[in-house]
Length: 330
Image 1 (cartoon, rainbow, N blue to C red):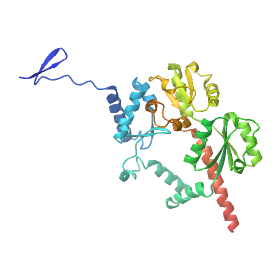
Image 2 (image 1 turned 135 degrees about the vertical axis):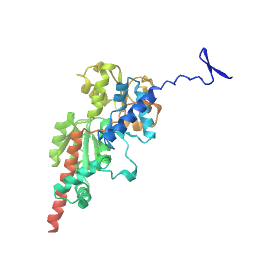
Image 3 (image 1 turned 180 degrees about the vertical axis):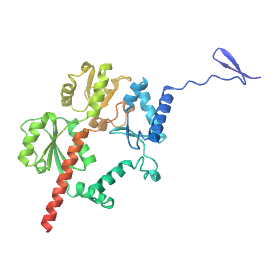
Image 4 (image 1 turned 90 degrees about the horizontal axis):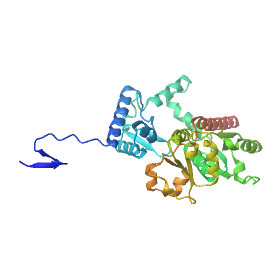
């Protein structure tokens, strides 16, 4: 009879071996998978709905954030969740043949179509109405900011998510004249610290000023992490450093904020167990590095209220352009 030595004892063939201990990642994967499955079954979750971030999951399960992120990535390979680089973790969409399941993935679309009908828009006409509201005219935005990080993040989001043509203007040097291209804008976009200046520029151009609030989800997460220890924020423009310190100066744990500037500081020195966030421009400059496996996922730039403000401007401008064309034709 063969035997195997396990530790300091001997186990005879046929004896029951102790059950292997589940890894922390395995435990989290199982728990999160069950949560998504049950949530969909009970109607608590919908396909495409946002889930807690890896940082939030790490706090809940009392593990390193890298373990929680690895668990989410395993679930992504199984088709349970989707990790979107710019906005977080979402319940994965079902296979294409299930997209018409109105109780889950199609629920939001059903709500939109039903609301359209209550507004007198037949379901078959809604897509064209949406196109007219967003693409009747190509709109241009002039973005005013004082550092490269925010100029890049605001401009790319306006282009990618809202379809605007963008001219970025660095207003870090007061008194510089507005470039000719920037004067042909349909709106002026900035953030709250530069609201007064943006409104003056917009008034001189005869266009609206959109003063946006930014990164609500990200800043909220940073505020939750700061009291627990060092939190690293990596930027590409040294001018963004002072702005970030002002944003968090009144928060608990503000002394734990560690701001690093690419090209000035060595980002490889960020401790393995410390939470870190890289601005969108910094991510672009660094490319794919091991550091990306353990940083806070890239956040959407605009807050929900600001997103609605941009969409409201786009819809109003398109409907006005369509009305003008109609009157000209008549």
